[in-house]
Length: 408
Image 1 (cartoon, helix red, strand yellow):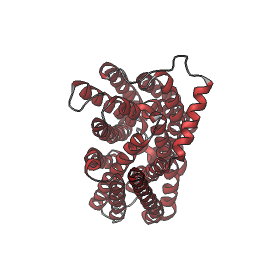
Image 2 (cartoon, rainbow, N blue to C red; image 1 turned 180 degrees about the vertical axis):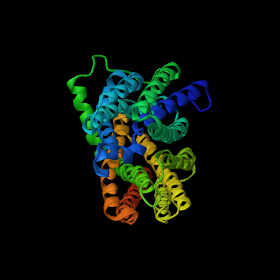
Image 3 (cartoon, one colour; image 1 turned 90 degrees about the horizontal axis):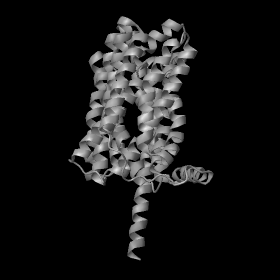
Image 4 (cartoon, rainbow, N blue to C red; image 1 turned 90 degrees about the vertical axis):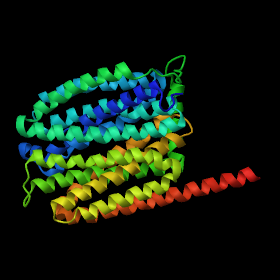
């Protein structure tokens, strides 16, 4: 097993973080330019959201197939295939001349991204020691936020000055170079044994049973739902804020509104802190804390002041990434078998939540501006807190039952 502080740990952690960085750069390249694209294609904010939702939806739908494939060929190969597909699919976007075709290309990008996202944490769970896993997951998710920041800033600034096509080409070149570095650094798996006779029907049925088993394990499913609601709020509060700032009375240029994604940096810090929190406190209390901080951020952002909006976004990022890191690691740790499938199922909930939440919160924005967003967001936060409390109670009951069993 890879231990904390060793050379393999440093190489693997950096390679996985870089892969994660590339995934989220590509996934969110178009988020800051949604207002401009809506104008270019003469469509509503809800319709142009497909440029973001198509990628997250297709990513969510193909996570489990990629995870199942990794049970046969290994996590290492799947991650590299996924990363080298990014520049190829990215360049296909240049031939899109309508919102539909561009959304379709974004859906293909989501499928390519899903390979790495589906199995990276499973690779860590199998190759890293328990202590190394928790710290590595925190670093991995920190790279998520950094990738999201860079991708959005690059997309927004490049699109304003040179057009979205140049942004796509630049990202494709960067993705190819990054994929080569990951290939060079990432250690091959030592604790994975592929099936001797390939992936048979019996093994496919076994994977189906694992999916059902994971969903029936209440502690896993509740954590998956928490991840989905948390992400629905987090990523789409940022999308709505973009529309808010380019509209009157602020009327900010795209290159400036893209800078709001620098507020993700607070999430980079709290994602790292989540690993240390879990070593001293309960995971469920951390989820409640993170959700509370995120909720406070939404309310602070309601103040009609640029500094208040930025403080609100910092709080939203801090709380959401803290909750996400804890829930993600929880699923990987608590899964009794087929960890790649379990983490893929978590991400299915995560990205479906983000996709559906976009249409929901943007509709709230169109009908009631930020006050409508706050009202709609409160509904989701109430659901989020309820799920966290249920998970906390269930886990306490499980611990109490195991203690009674050990005494008898």
